[in-house]
Length: 119
Image 1 (spheres, rainbow, N blue to C red):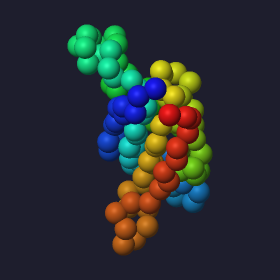
Image 2: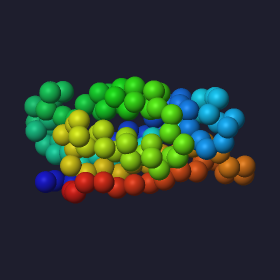
Image 3: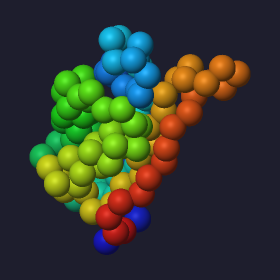
């Protein structure tokens, strides 16, 4: 496998997330950054969408899932997002950063970074 990466940065999605009662009654923004291992050499030669990892399809699937979810912890949401990408798309490894902007006063965001799969 080559070390090619396809990425999505700052995919902002509204969802119910949090442990406090008030958080269960509103939607908040989460932001996803993904780096996904995928050999792009065939697509680089063919210039055909069918030969690459369709980052729009990945984004749409994650938006659909996250908008419909109601997790308490960003850790659980991140694990489930990673599972979806690895199971539903031709990705063998990913690094996923899930941020919750404005969750802690004085910081721009908090969250987790996870790596799953093998390069």
